[in-house]
Length: 203
Image (cartoon, rainbow, N blue to C red):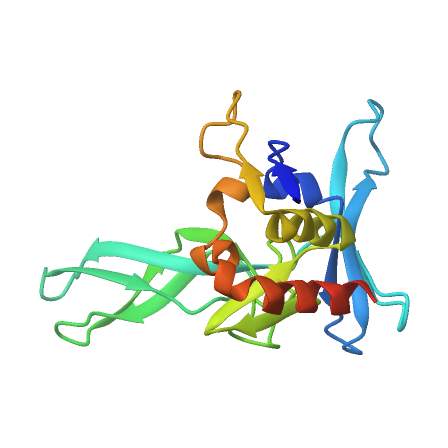
């Protein structure tokens, strides 16, 4: 009988290296931890994207800016809210029309920053730093089954293969990766299908 005991790992336990699809050449690439160049304590890390096929590398996410306006129109005095499309540059002022009377005026821009979204593979699971699609993902019964890297695959394989699955809630509450797995991963009817996918990913 195969036995699995939850090791209290959460998704962050597998962030050290995330395999993704390169936005330039579509080859397998990585988002991984790297020590910051100016760090003196030896504990400051950033997540860096690197493709060993086309040598594309990104050290910092690209940010965009969204203007948010919540004002009273100076023509009709009606209150309105407005949110712009993502902008590449942070504006000092922003011109917009009142939705009530079409009066156009310029406001001091209040902005918030967002990471630029990738333009590839919409609908797939993506990592959180550069919004790049994960390399390991496949649709199973209308759900996306995915993994960050080979360690993540091994951990999932041990869980899915096990006949006896034991939870370990010491200090973890409901925050472990295993406790938050979707039902289709836990379901016995999908066991063989998921194990075949994991085996293929390891090859």
